[in-house]
Structures are given as C-alpha cells and as structure tokens.
Length: 252
Image 1 (tube, rainbow, N blue to C red):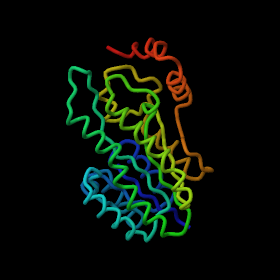
Image 2 (cartoon, rainbow, N blue to C red):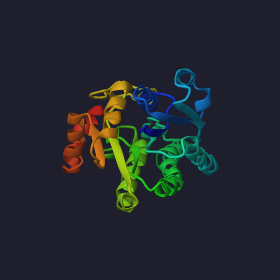
Image 3 (tube, rainbow, N blue to C red):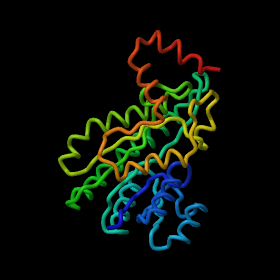
C-alpha cells in the first residue's frame, strides 16, 4: 500500500529534500507552501512525478487558507498517513534591533501555524479509522534559547509544549504525534546567524534522518545530531550561572 504524505513548508531546505525522498520511495506526496504552485523546484518534480505529487498553496498564518487547504488535502488522495509540519520563519536580532513585527511573525507561523492546522487535520485523521502520524518540526533551540534568537526559540519551545499537552488525547484517536528537535541546518534561515553553528548539517542529511523515522517504531521525540542534542539538554538542566558561562561564548 502506498504511503500518503503531506509536507507543509516544502519549497526549500528540509521540506524540499523530504519531498524528494518520499517521491523516490514511491510515496504519494502533497507539497504545500505559500507559493508551492509557483516553485520552480516543485514544478520540476511535478513534471517527473505527475501522478505522485500534488501542489497546494497554504498560508499557515491565515485561518481561511488553512481550512481550505486541509479540506483540499483530504480530497487529493482520499486519506493521509503522515503530515509533516515544517512551516517556519526565523530572524536573528540582538536586543537593540528587536522588532515586534518579527516576533509576531515567528510566533504566528512557527507556533500558531501548527495550532491552526491541528484541529481540522485531527478531525479528518480521526475519521479515517486507521493509524496516522503527525510530525512537528521543532528545533534543539526549544531546549535552550539561541543567541539573538529569542523569538524563534520561544516559538519552538511553545510548539514542543503544545505537543506534550495534546499527545495523550491524540494517542486515544490512533494518531501518533512526534516532534523533531534538530540542530543547525544550512538553509536561507540559518544564513542569518552571526555566530558559530556547531555540527551544521546540509538539509539533505537532516531530511534523511527525518525520513528514516517514517518506518521506525513510534517515539515521541527525535533529536539530532547526537552530541549537540545531549549537550543542549545538559546545559538546560544545570544552574544558569554555569550554562551562561558556556553560551555567552557564542555572542559576538
């Protein structure tokens, strides 16, 4: 039986690479982003995988767009096995450059975007009467705030807390919720960072690690790379005076 996957946030980076991996594995894929139907990369894939790939535009900051797109997604292949929420925005701002509109955009997309998706999505998945999986792409910054990235880190920490709070309810509905806490990935987002990024990954590597989870036994949290994830988990637990002495070295 073919696996049917919906990837939200698929026009570049991890999302685009995950679309490629799914198609190469003979999955049926819905690729969504703000301008999915105009994306050169997605249109090129569509020309190759005509019957396997569908493109749907979505603006996760709009209630109307989300509701419309969720309805459309469940008419494309009749049902879904996996939904991967990868929509995200990021801005790096020292305190002197804080911009409230940037804070609002990150919270509105990274956190509230998932909130908008989840309620109508779960309603459809529950009616399928079969096991399904929802994967939320968070970040290791949910463990410990990034230098100059307070708004982004806060939005990802909120996303993880949301997942933890609703996981028991979803399990009763046969919906398996997962979070991905990954490290630094070389994308247009991390290009904004003005500090050293340890264990920086190519998006192809991160996408492969996420894709591998599709067929593995269920685990609520997937975190990588190993060393960085354990390090950040550790400094989130030690007294702040000690953790600050480590993290302040990232500042420039």
